[in-house]
Length: 237
Image: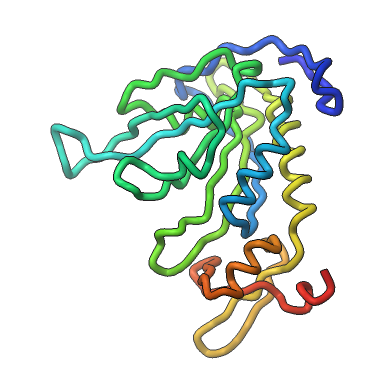
């Protein structure tokens, strides 16, 4: 996959790659993740601003885990896809439950999706094809609103053949989104323990909108603990 300059969206020229369609023999040496607290509305704003028009059209996809029709005590992945990048419309499964893994891909970078048949390892294939992964905080969890993650696997290796695949264009878009997110982060996290002790986590930070949601009574959870934004950071931001 050829490199391009995202600073000039109009001049990007990349040949779309064929997708990986099997996970057999492939492993990921590592990946990249940014974890933070934000609202769904903010995530949509970030995608609108950060997904470069040079790689339009962008799409959302993923897989809902549903009971097998022949064995209702067993579950399998049922892929879905959308032609629009609309988190607020697509963050719910049929039936209303939240989706925890939503992948973002471009037709200009990948010429088609992996097979959409139910029962396949579709989410694994999305990850191993370099698609960007958004894991929105779960609003249905009875213990509170959890953190959001922005993730990518930008390199995979086949242990049998030695073949390597890299996804530099998706990684550049990931970095572009990561920079936009970091510009909005204003406060560290304070973890609150039942005995009254508190611990400051500087790795997972809050946007102003998330901090405002907490101020109106929304509970937030990190590492299984109730948490809040660090007030001193809010006062100086």
